[in-house]
Image (tube, rainbow, N blue to C red; front, top):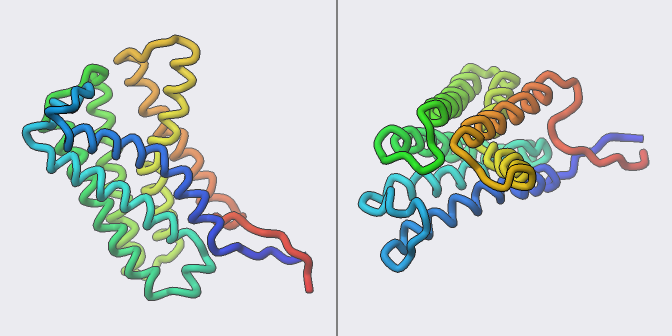
Length: 218
Protein backbone atom coordinates (compact mmCIF):
# COMPACT_ATOMS: atom_id res chain seq x y z
CA UNK A 1 0.00 0.00 0.00
CA UNK A 2 1.17 3.53 -0.67
CA UNK A 3 -0.12 6.92 0.37
CA UNK A 4 -0.62 9.40 -2.45
CA UNK A 5 -2.04 12.90 -2.22
CA UNK A 6 -4.59 13.89 -4.82
CA UNK A 7 -3.83 17.38 -6.22
CA UNK A 8 -7.32 18.84 -6.27
CA UNK A 9 -8.96 17.27 -3.23
CA UNK A 10 -7.59 19.71 -0.65
CA UNK A 11 -8.46 22.87 -2.65
CA UNK A 12 -11.92 21.51 -3.40
CA UNK A 13 -12.65 20.76 0.25
CA UNK A 14 -11.29 24.09 1.51
CA UNK A 15 -13.11 26.14 -1.13
CA UNK A 16 -16.31 24.29 -0.28
CA UNK A 17 -15.84 25.19 3.38
CA UNK A 18 -15.13 28.79 2.35
CA UNK A 19 -18.37 29.12 0.39
CA UNK A 20 -20.44 29.93 3.49
CA UNK A 21 -18.54 33.09 4.53
CA UNK A 22 -18.01 34.08 0.89
CA UNK A 23 -21.73 33.76 0.12
CA UNK A 24 -22.75 35.60 3.28
CA UNK A 25 -20.39 38.52 2.69
CA UNK A 26 -21.23 38.69 -1.03
CA UNK A 27 -24.90 38.95 -0.10
CA UNK A 28 -24.07 41.84 2.20
CA UNK A 29 -22.00 43.53 -0.50
CA UNK A 30 -24.87 43.30 -2.97
CA UNK A 31 -27.17 44.81 -0.37
CA UNK A 32 -24.81 47.78 -0.05
CA UNK A 33 -24.41 48.21 -3.81
CA UNK A 34 -28.18 48.09 -4.30
CA UNK A 35 -28.98 50.27 -1.31
CA UNK A 36 -31.78 52.68 -2.08
CA UNK A 37 -33.94 50.03 -3.71
CA UNK A 38 -32.83 47.56 -1.06
CA UNK A 39 -33.94 47.86 2.55
CA UNK A 40 -31.92 44.92 3.83
CA UNK A 41 -31.13 45.39 7.52
CA UNK A 42 -27.62 46.66 8.08
CA UNK A 43 -27.11 48.10 4.59
CA UNK A 44 -27.68 51.66 5.78
CA UNK A 45 -24.68 51.40 8.12
CA UNK A 46 -22.27 51.45 5.18
CA UNK A 47 -24.33 53.13 2.47
CA UNK A 48 -22.50 56.46 2.67
CA UNK A 49 -19.05 54.89 2.36
CA UNK A 50 -19.39 51.34 0.95
CA UNK A 51 -15.88 51.05 -0.52
CA UNK A 52 -14.33 49.87 2.75
CA UNK A 53 -16.82 47.03 3.15
CA UNK A 54 -16.61 46.02 -0.51
CA UNK A 55 -12.80 45.99 -0.31
CA UNK A 56 -12.93 43.89 2.85
CA UNK A 57 -15.27 41.36 1.26
CA UNK A 58 -13.50 41.07 -2.09
CA UNK A 59 -10.00 40.67 -0.66
CA UNK A 60 -11.20 38.38 2.13
CA UNK A 61 -12.87 36.10 -0.43
CA UNK A 62 -9.79 36.21 -2.65
CA UNK A 63 -7.60 35.17 0.28
CA UNK A 64 -9.78 32.16 1.11
CA UNK A 65 -9.89 30.94 -2.50
CA UNK A 66 -6.18 31.40 -3.21
CA UNK A 67 -5.05 30.00 0.14
CA UNK A 68 -7.11 26.87 -0.50
CA UNK A 69 -4.78 25.94 -3.35
CA UNK A 70 -1.64 26.58 -1.31
CA UNK A 71 -2.19 23.60 0.98
CA UNK A 72 -2.01 21.02 -1.82
CA UNK A 73 1.45 19.46 -1.78
CA UNK A 74 1.24 18.03 -5.34
CA UNK A 75 0.19 21.39 -6.78
CA UNK A 76 2.87 23.12 -4.75
CA UNK A 77 5.57 20.79 -6.05
CA UNK A 78 4.34 20.80 -9.63
CA UNK A 79 3.79 24.55 -9.94
CA UNK A 80 6.28 26.06 -7.50
CA UNK A 81 6.51 29.46 -9.23
CA UNK A 82 2.72 29.76 -9.30
CA UNK A 83 2.62 28.71 -5.65
CA UNK A 84 4.99 31.54 -4.75
CA UNK A 85 3.10 34.09 -6.84
CA UNK A 86 -0.32 33.05 -5.52
CA UNK A 87 1.09 33.06 -2.00
CA UNK A 88 2.14 36.69 -2.34
CA UNK A 89 -1.27 37.69 -3.69
CA UNK A 90 -3.02 35.74 -0.92
CA UNK A 91 -0.87 37.38 1.75
CA UNK A 92 -1.56 40.89 0.44
CA UNK A 93 -5.27 40.06 0.20
CA UNK A 94 -5.34 38.86 3.80
CA UNK A 95 -3.58 41.99 5.04
CA UNK A 96 -6.01 44.26 3.18
CA UNK A 97 -9.02 42.27 4.40
CA UNK A 98 -7.86 42.30 8.02
CA UNK A 99 -7.01 46.02 7.95
CA UNK A 100 -10.34 47.01 6.41
CA UNK A 101 -12.10 44.67 8.84
CA UNK A 102 -10.63 46.58 11.76
CA UNK A 103 -11.62 49.85 10.08
CA UNK A 104 -15.21 48.63 9.73
CA UNK A 105 -15.39 47.80 13.43
CA UNK A 106 -13.88 50.99 14.83
CA UNK A 107 -14.99 53.48 12.19
CA UNK A 108 -18.62 52.59 11.48
CA UNK A 109 -21.82 52.34 13.53
CA UNK A 110 -22.29 48.99 15.26
CA UNK A 111 -24.95 46.52 14.18
CA UNK A 112 -28.00 45.49 16.20
CA UNK A 113 -26.27 42.34 17.53
CA UNK A 114 -22.94 43.99 18.32
CA UNK A 115 -21.66 44.54 21.84
CA UNK A 116 -18.44 46.06 23.13
CA UNK A 117 -17.22 42.56 23.87
CA UNK A 118 -18.00 41.22 20.38
CA UNK A 119 -16.43 44.27 18.73
CA UNK A 120 -13.28 43.89 20.84
CA UNK A 121 -13.07 40.21 19.91
CA UNK A 122 -13.55 40.99 16.22
CA UNK A 123 -10.62 43.40 16.39
CA UNK A 124 -8.56 40.83 18.31
CA UNK A 125 -9.06 38.10 15.73
CA UNK A 126 -8.53 40.53 12.83
CA UNK A 127 -5.19 41.45 14.40
CA UNK A 128 -4.47 37.73 14.88
CA UNK A 129 -5.13 37.13 11.18
CA UNK A 130 -2.91 40.03 10.23
CA UNK A 131 -0.17 38.87 12.57
CA UNK A 132 -0.35 35.27 11.37
CA UNK A 133 0.08 36.29 7.74
CA UNK A 134 2.98 38.62 8.51
CA UNK A 135 4.70 35.91 10.56
CA UNK A 136 4.12 33.45 7.72
CA UNK A 137 5.78 35.85 5.28
CA UNK A 138 8.68 36.42 7.67
CA UNK A 139 9.14 32.67 8.17
CA UNK A 140 9.33 31.88 4.46
CA UNK A 141 11.80 34.69 3.82
CA UNK A 142 14.00 33.06 6.47
CA UNK A 143 13.58 29.66 4.86
CA UNK A 144 11.53 28.30 7.76
CA UNK A 145 9.00 26.31 5.75
CA UNK A 146 7.41 24.47 8.69
CA UNK A 147 6.77 27.70 10.57
CA UNK A 148 5.47 29.33 7.39
CA UNK A 149 3.02 26.48 6.87
CA UNK A 150 1.89 26.61 10.51
CA UNK A 151 1.19 30.35 10.43
CA UNK A 152 -0.70 30.06 7.15
CA UNK A 153 -2.85 27.28 8.58
CA UNK A 154 -3.68 29.55 11.54
CA UNK A 155 -4.44 32.46 9.22
CA UNK A 156 -6.75 30.35 7.07
CA UNK A 157 -8.48 28.96 10.17
CA UNK A 158 -9.28 32.48 11.34
CA UNK A 159 -10.36 33.66 7.90
CA UNK A 160 -12.71 30.75 7.25
CA UNK A 161 -14.26 30.78 10.74
CA UNK A 162 -17.45 32.22 9.26
CA UNK A 163 -18.43 28.68 8.27
CA UNK A 164 -18.08 27.40 11.84
CA UNK A 165 -19.88 30.46 13.19
CA UNK A 166 -22.75 29.89 10.73
CA UNK A 167 -23.12 26.30 11.96
CA UNK A 168 -23.11 27.41 15.59
CA UNK A 169 -25.65 30.15 14.92
CA UNK A 170 -27.84 27.66 13.06
CA UNK A 171 -27.76 25.31 16.04
CA UNK A 172 -28.58 28.21 18.34
CA UNK A 173 -31.54 29.22 16.19
CA UNK A 174 -32.81 25.64 16.24
CA UNK A 175 -32.67 25.61 20.03
CA UNK A 176 -33.53 29.18 21.06
CA UNK A 177 -35.28 30.55 17.97
CA UNK A 178 -33.67 34.00 18.18
CA UNK A 179 -30.13 35.37 18.16
CA UNK A 180 -29.42 37.91 20.89
CA UNK A 181 -26.40 40.22 21.26
CA UNK A 182 -25.17 38.13 24.19
CA UNK A 183 -25.48 34.90 22.20
CA UNK A 184 -23.70 36.50 19.26
CA UNK A 185 -20.89 37.64 21.56
CA UNK A 186 -20.40 34.02 22.64
CA UNK A 187 -20.91 32.17 19.35
CA UNK A 188 -18.61 34.31 17.20
CA UNK A 189 -15.45 33.85 19.32
CA UNK A 190 -16.41 30.21 19.87
CA UNK A 191 -16.26 29.71 16.09
CA UNK A 192 -12.78 31.22 15.88
CA UNK A 193 -11.63 29.21 18.88
CA UNK A 194 -12.87 25.90 17.45
CA UNK A 195 -11.09 26.60 14.18
CA UNK A 196 -7.85 27.49 15.92
CA UNK A 197 -8.00 24.33 18.04
CA UNK A 198 -8.39 22.29 14.86
CA UNK A 199 -5.56 24.24 13.23
CA UNK A 200 -3.21 23.58 16.14
CA UNK A 201 -4.12 19.87 16.06
CA UNK A 202 -3.27 19.78 12.34
CA UNK A 203 0.00 21.62 12.87
CA UNK A 204 1.06 19.28 15.66
CA UNK A 205 -0.11 16.12 13.97
CA UNK A 206 2.46 13.81 12.46
CA UNK A 207 0.05 13.14 9.61
CA UNK A 208 0.09 15.31 6.51
CA UNK A 209 -2.27 18.25 6.27
CA UNK A 210 -3.58 17.46 2.80
CA UNK A 211 -6.29 14.80 2.40
CA UNK A 212 -4.73 11.60 1.08
CA UNK A 213 -5.71 8.84 -1.25
CA UNK A 214 -4.84 5.23 -0.50
CA UNK A 215 -3.92 3.28 -3.58
CA UNK A 216 -2.64 -0.19 -4.29
CA UNK A 217 1.09 -0.44 -4.50
CA UNK A 218 2.11 -1.20 -8.05
